[in-house]
Length: 255
Image 1 (tube, helix red, strand yellow):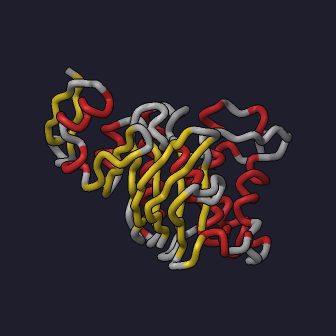
Image 2: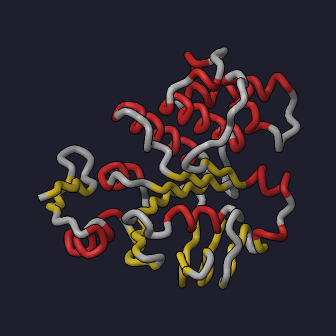
Image 3: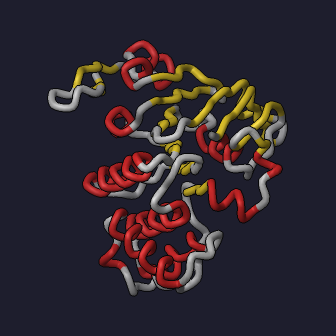
């Protein structure tokens, strides 16, 4: 289990997170919502060890995250950042195969996992392509396949952190991506995903964390968090909240 206790993060002279208490449960998808500058990406950075806490603790299975060595941590914790700085002409399979570097399972098994995760991300048809020739949305799907390959097929004790994995995707692939996320969660992996789309969060997340100014405003089920009063207070947006006619989750409509 990945846990944050009284977590605070400071950048320069500004405190960007404070007082965050959070525990990711095996098999759940936790969505993180909030306006720009709320601290969503800083939270993800602190949870993966990229940003050192200025106060509080991040732990994995009861051990401080800093005490996990690189290979052991990488076998348990995978991270998809908002953007990639990969600027080399690797093939798509090579990029996805980077997710297998923490493991020593053999070329045959790694190849099967690369193929499986490309299918899960609906990127199988991109196999053999030069990564640099892909569109932004295609690259995003390839990187999703890479982090899925790092943990595939998923199990209890693993954690997947995703920072806006649908930001460059068309509506169909937004749903395909989040279905793949739900699939690896169903295998026991705990998932935290930063999202901007409230309706996608309502549909695919078990719990939601609503942030504003680096602090928790609400943490609970989509029905508990996606309330008109909370959403207006945090986003400044007046909304109507209905129930989805088929699936029952909250359906957010701007007024």
